[in-house]
Length: 129
Picture 1 (cartoon, rainbow, N blue to C red):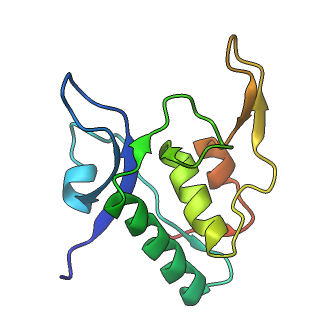
Picture 2 (cartoon, rainbow, N blue to C red):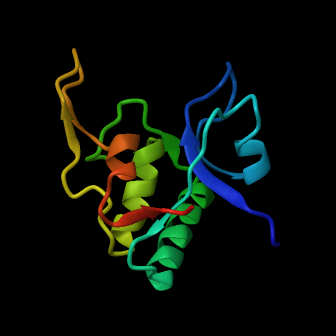
């Protein structure tokens, strides 16, 4: 309808809150209470077809009410965390934003993760200025 939106995944904010993938207006997403900084990135090769496919994939996670992945497990796509959502949507559209996810040796949770910094430094993306 001409309104800019953000598709993202987040844990519940309070008891009884619904977690997971949701579509939110850009205005609400970037409100002072939610964000301190923001940046916009675009596919480096300007592939509108792949970008559109990734957006439609991300919308499908909202439509399926995909829950938030509090285990941050890249192998299980039944639940998604924030950067996993972006990475997986683009991967299904044919663009791997993180061909080498980061290994973190965290206590009780050692494993591979897609971090915000991984996406920011992806060779498949460029910042929009």
